[in-house]
Length: 132
Image (tube, rainbow, N blue to C red):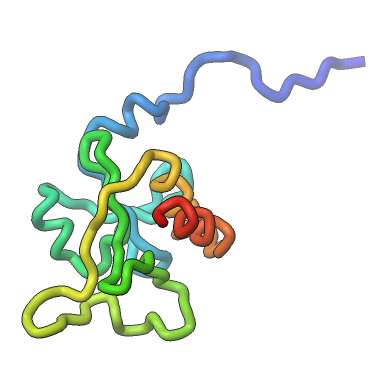
């Protein structure tokens, strides 16, 4: 009988946690992405935090280990897959954006990014509970 081996080597993954936190990483929803990273997340290229925060299609930002997610005026987290969310990403209110970025913990950020890639609202509800 032959032995079945799932993973031959135990070498670390090249996209480990250290490499993920080293730059400006911008996350978006399906259909708005420029590329898909190794973990299956939808991403956009960007050069600075200020430029990224003004881009209506950026929903989550990892800026060198500081985590930000898109929040509305009412304090609710942006749901790009929601029933009434079509066309509200770039919505302006008297010259200022309706959405702003608020800092959050790493676990909340990871849950929100997971929600963006899977459309599973359980992850969004977990983030909303933690943000209260």
